[in-house]
Amino acid sequence: MDRAARPRTLRFGANYTPARGWFHHWLDFDLDEVRADLDSVAALGLDHVRVFPLWPLFQPNRTLIRPRAVEQLVALADAAAERGLDVHVDGLQGHLSSFDFLPAWTGTWHRRGLFTDPDVVAGQEEYLRTLAAALAGRPNFLGMTVGNEVNQFSDAPHPDPDRITAAQAGRWLERMLAACEEGAPGRFHLHAEYDAVWYRDGHPFTPAQAARLGAATAVHSWVFNGTAQRHGRTGTATEQHAAYLIELSKAWA
Image 1 (tube, helix red, strand yellow):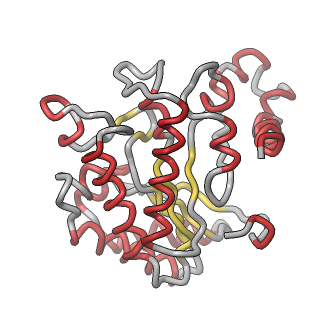
Image 2: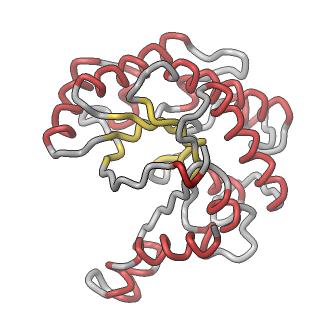
């Protein structure tokens, strides 16, 4: 999508975190509970939710993307539509709130580079393409995010990173975004890194990639990265941290 043609209406949404079971709710998916959660979100006046499928549950084997799990994701999107909510879906989870969720076919005895192994990357592409295609016909589907803060797997301080170069990170992002576009052409597809992109020297995921690849730049303005500790909870640097990162990303665009 051409940047000039993108809508500029300010929108407010929420990361959908189920009231029962946290993100493990996918193990015991209950559509009635999802509907109740979405009723609460809609009652706040928000207009969209960000949804987090757990990658190992949706793609437990490289060649197996569970149809039932995909159907449940679509059912969630339909329930959101009934409440006037759009949905944006993250694919490779990956990583949530300090917990890693990686399928067994990427680790231990099957350890392969998340960003460089040809079979792993092809499996990731097929997974993102499948989710996007399943949702492509839903008018309330905004698009895909490649995954939540996947860059943390590529560098310290992760305890066991799959290290890559900036060039490899860029090629991987381009392939993942292309897979999303193949599945759902013309939707709002992006990637979202944690703030090592902006602050950590030598990090393989770069400000230029964050600002120039995908339909938008996502900034994760966690003030517990040292900002609040240094400046206090009401310090200007703390309260304006998100605004600062937005301006920084614009400078790189």
